[in-house]
Image 1: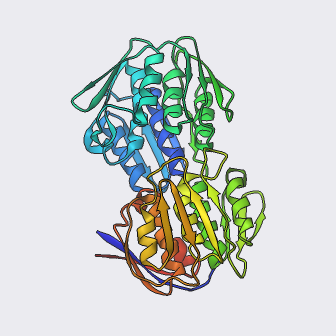
Image 2: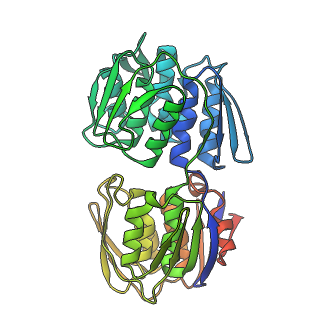
Image 3: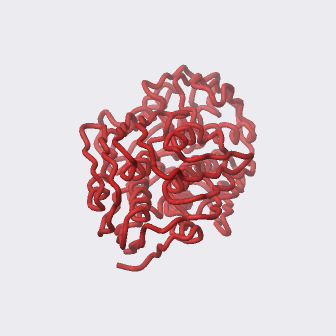
Length: 416
C-alpha cells in the first residue's frame, strides 16, 4: 500500500493541465453498452475507477482497449447483463450499467452498491424511476434484478436532484417507447455531456442543462466518438491550493463549470484571472475566512468541501462549512486537526477557527476528496506529513503528486 509524503510550507508556481472528468467518463462508458458497435472515448483519465469500470464492461462481454488516455469500447459481443458484487462494491458508479443493460437486453442483474440492504438509500431513485418506466424490479441475494420487454416512457420526478439517478434513467429512457419527462433532474456538466452524447448517437433529449429533461424514445442508437470534458473537481482542487500557496495557472478547463468556486476563492482575497480555457489564481497575503454551503450544481460542489475546509484551517479568522449533500462527509476533519487545525463538527456543519500555521504529522485518508484535502493540508503544514491509504486518491486524481511536484511542491509517493 502506498503513501504520499509532503514537506510543506513551500510556495507553488506554474501551470497544471487538468485531466478528463472522472464523473463524466463513467456514465459515458456505461452508455457505450447501448449501441451495437464501437465507441471511442478520448481524454479518459487513467484512474482506479476508470479501470474498474472497464473491467466491469469486459465482464458483461464488451471488448475494451485503453491506451494513452483513449478508450475503445466494442459493445457488439455484450451478452451477460450481470454486474457482480466484487466490482460494484468498490465503486458505486458501477450502478450506471443498470439502465443501459436493461434497455438493451430487457433484463439486468446488478449488485447493490456495497451489498447494502434494501431501504431508503440513494439507489431508490434509480429503482423507482425504472419502475415508472415499466420495469419489474426485485431484490434477490443482494442483487437488483430488473426486467422489462420494452420500457415505456413516463413522467418521473426526483425528490432531490440525483446525478446518478438522472444519468441512469436518461440512458434507460432514450430507447423507451414514447416520451419520458424527468422533473428535478440533475444539471451537472457531466449529465449535460452524457445527454449530448446520447443525442449524437441518435437520441432525442430536450431541455439539456435544465432541471426538466424530455426524452423522446428512439428505436436504436449508433456509436459516436466523444472527448471527455475537463475535471472541474480536479481544477477546483488546484485553485484552492493556489489560493494559499502560490500562483497557479490551471489549463484545459471550462471556467463556467467553476463559477461558484471562483466566486468563493475571490472572497478569500485571492485574485482570479479567467480566459477561454484557463484560470489563474494569485493568493492574497492573508487568506480571509469565507463561509461555504455546498449545493447541487451550479452551487458549490460537495466534492470540494474537504479541500475548502483545509484552506479555511489557515484563514485569518473563523468560518463555517456546511455540507447539504452528504451529512457524514467530514472524515477529513480529525486528520486535519492532527496537523494542528482547529475544526469542530456538529451534524453537517464544520466550525473552522483559522490557525497561523499547521505542523506536519502522520494522517490517514478515508475517501477521494478527503485525500485531496490532506495533500493540501500537508503542503500548507510546516515539516513532513505522511498520508497513508492513498489508494483512495488514485480513484479520482490522475498523477496528483506529479502535478503538484511540477508546481514546485516537495511531494512524493513511496510504499508503506
